[in-house]
Image 1 (spheres, rainbow, N blue to C red):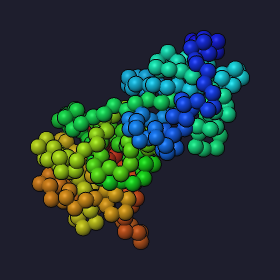
Image 2 (image 1 turned 180 degrees about the vertical axis):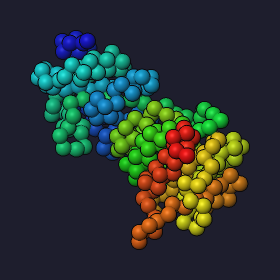
Image 3 (image 1 turned 60 degrees about the vertical axis):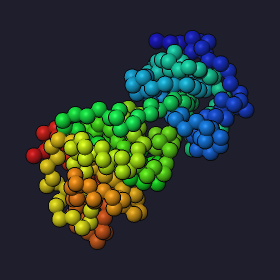
Length: 285
């Protein structure tokens, strides 16, 4: 296990007004030139992503660690081990002050470290195909937290990847990354054209499961064997009409037992994805 002294010896000391701290702040806030010129870099506050980034061989370009926290003696042995691994793995490691951590953070109670990495860019041809697989189509969502939560649910349901069409949020958005808890970079997430995606689904024999208030078949009565793509629509307008024209479209309805007409898109897509995932894994008959 690394020691405080060995970690510090591998870190460049970085001031609060440095370009590196400014870059980190811009990535986390989503404002400034960094988000315009560097579309694939994303930032994680804290150590929660460390192991996933290293295990999945995600390129880490910057690692910032508070020298105040390091020298306080309050880090656990597990935290110090993760910090040591990151200083070895990252292209560049920087020692910064607690004050710099507060400047970077966009929330109260700033963490003691920040990780900047670059997401892998995938195309439809990169999506690995299996005889039985579950993917999600995210159509025009506007809220990064919603997108991240859907990706997290897809991962938990055994999904193989996601395709984003009519994209309105950067896939490197810090809130998306945070709410996805690693799913946004541990599985393929493709940014693609909607019509190209529809052709790809049809050519590769996917069932495109659409939640539709006019459908008659309940989501729990669908045959989820084979290749399944669950289509999740915009928070306000739902799915694009195009999906209903696909020959592989399977419209389903989630029964509403109260006075509300429909569920939030995150809850609806999670219900359908879990139904598909459980049946694919033989957990639910």
